[in-house]
Image (cartoon, rainbow, N blue to C red; front, side):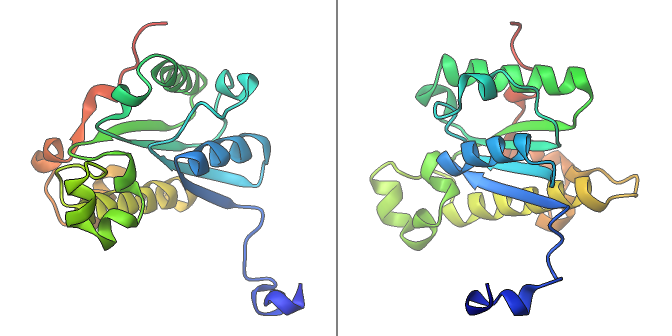
Length: 191
């Protein structure tokens, strides 16, 4: 509507090529929206809360490129069902040829993917809400990886991978990658 600035944005948003990013319940919302609305072209979710998903969505094959970045504590919080749903997403998407990636961010906890630990790092780390990795580093890694993944899967015609772009964006070398990510989510467990 005009009163909300509709005139300013009219014609400037590509409503036929949307991308979504969400954390926790927002991540579950993004997965659901992206799988049901054909205008979405890529998705990134941070430590997604998988329990709110409908049974149909939890067993769906993701149709667009999707990046999962989860906290190091992901398996502690949702050891059975959450892992099972994520493994199913990975397995089904790869079988259908949909680009999908999943990484644990070392030294992170669920709240690290929000702004609160960045605003009050000592407080949130002392309470155990944020992991031992500096909160501003976790959020920078998450944001830059998401941007690189989304842009790569939206407009890339180059032979450069999204991860190469992210590493360049972050200013780190590939050998340092293991200091940031755990590869334990790259290969889902057998069904």
